[in-house]
Image (tube, rainbow over all chains, first blue to last red):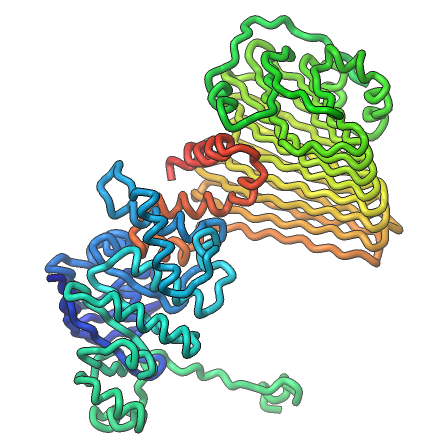
Length: 277
Length: 363
């Protein structure tokens, strides 16, 4: 059974410490959800686990089935079984969706071996249908000109094809309308099995109506400040995050500092106002 | 006017590389080596295609009408016109649409190449013409490609060059487009040669239109320079220049595009776009998109974006398990994709992709 362990993880970007000691264990078959207000480090955690070059780990460790993930390159992490469904995936003009995913699948095979073309097309078409995406998807360029919802569905489609051990879905619900959310939710739920460890990062409980989580964590100030079951979600939905802030004694939950610059309205006299004349 | 002397042919075998290209998926082709036609499988009504041996007697009236050396042409252009040892003449008759693409393979073996191609499309005709150039040994190659697009004719003239290292390549392309005519010059440049490719398109009557598209990859110590000049000599003319480049190792690649709208040529459109990826610290890639405009009532734009491979794209592809090398290859191929549609056979597309891989293998 696969197992992702995050131990006392600290990470920074451009000298600002964002993660301040995150500890979390995800076993195969479990679904975890991390919630929290904006700017508390949720997406950073996802990016650090995947190995985005922008972030620097200063302390702690990440293990996948006992192997040190931090020593691996991004592509090695993926081949070891990690998957990150991104909040804002890059657009790659000229590279078709099907070429890309085929290359990714080939990368998982022994050298010299390739996926069988017919089986691949069948599997791909099936995934496209299940996600109710347009039929020309395989020939379209990767995420280029995709709507927000299409990008998110494309992430789920890739997850289906790659069949990871541990999947992290970073705000996979943002930008989705109600119908699309339902489709994505149902597809993710149907992928659940006793080997797959799932980590959902989200603002809203809406997503969790479709994907049931076993454990819910709340992130503030770059740490997981509260963990529990689905009952936490209901309370957040009704009361917001203030009660948690009070419980753990935090005023400002953010780790990303607030922009101090004064905003001015154009139309009055922006220069005057900014210069305080 | 052309003066033409042919060199003797030493070896009349078609190279294996070309044999494999014409093996199955190309239907209309011609192979010419050192000026001699080795194979020809084109027989279409309304289309004339032959080397200068026959064309200079068959089509002398058409050739004489092209007063190409009178205008301000370069010395290199004149040199080829005066010393050509290899020549192809293509003539599409009035109201004739040639559906299948033509493939002409121009090869150099024993003698330095001095080649001239002339394509003339008469009124209301259409042609998709693909030329593939290759040599086996280092050589000096001087080429002039001329395209005359008459009223309401459409010509797509695509060249792909694969010359060896230590070769020198000098190409002069000249296009003349008349009323409602459209000329598309595509150039897929995967040579290892020291290259200089100069394209001049003259839009001489209203509603004439031209697209000049170049894709080039340089590596090692290669130097290559591509100049495009689109001259708007009539009102309501449209000229589009697009350049895509990749430079690696210590090579230098230069794009110099000029859109020139002359005085009084109102309602003309001149657009230019340059994009480039620089793969190594010591490689160079310059783009100088110029607009020379002597008229107010026009639409014009120019731009250049050059940089290294996008980090976010790389991270995204790698996060799905692609090795860095594979991810880079995929991104580069995607970037160069605009030319793939212009290559008219799958074998040529594969050859292009393989050549790109070869030229970027030290990544």
